[in-house]
Length: 184
Image (cartoon, rainbow, N blue to C red; front, side, top):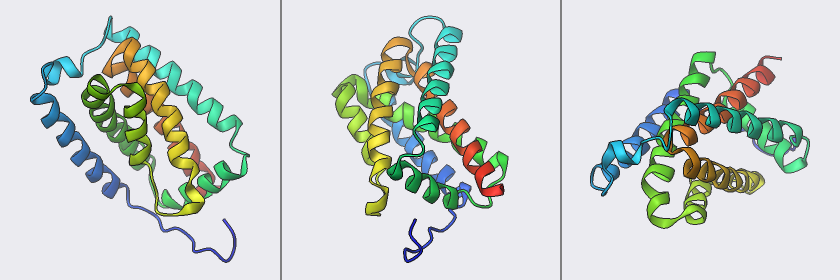
């Protein structure tokens, strides 16, 4: 970020966890009224262990790709902003945000919406959830859209557990790396 631009403030992890709690309540309420119900909407397609392992591998692969292209200017600006966002977080904060956001957002986007509106519209909604009112951060919803397509594909293969595991893995690895960058 340029020196004449305002420095973003740290966001308390508890604020994000509460936000994800609202997302989870909306998802669970919607699933409760859906034809598949809560358990059906959050079920694995195939073996649960296979779905979770697949999600973790895909999530780690997505993180690796993002890490490899992190030097691209829009991504480095986004990363700089995100480092400020997690300033002061503990490893517990990062883990809690990673888990709550992965579980809640996947329940809403993949478990509830994707079966109704389809893969691409669900990825677009996911991107909208990552809009930030700062033009410099235009890359975040773009990355979220691409990851939404990947997570949606993982959902189609392994169900909610696979998509949630992938999302949690991406967030956990990313937030841990961002925290380390702040500490250095």
